[in-house]
Image (cartoon, rainbow, N blue to C red):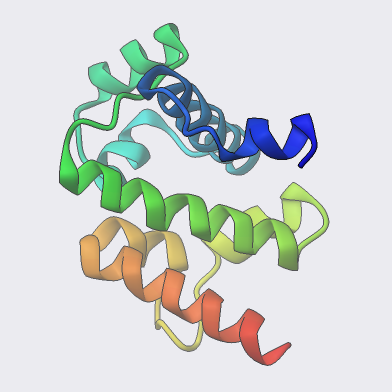
Length: 131
């Protein structure tokens, strides 16, 4: 077993997880022009909390609901990255009314937790069938 393989099998510390989650969420935020208010609507927590986490460059995952929401949010980001080569196309897909949702995916994600899951499930399905 190589040293690289050994390093990957060691679990991340809570601080390393918080930093990795921060990087993924705030990259998605910047790529798509989301606001702190958007993050609040989608993932919970108030805008001042998101600003503090941005300042600290870490998002602690102590809250079970936040962990679940973040998991779906990051999966959506990864799916859009795999489907669309540039951030403008990802943003356009996210913010344009979609015929399967009868609203934009972003609006559905902001509606409630079920909307977040619905967008993730849709993207998983589309990517799985190669559409």
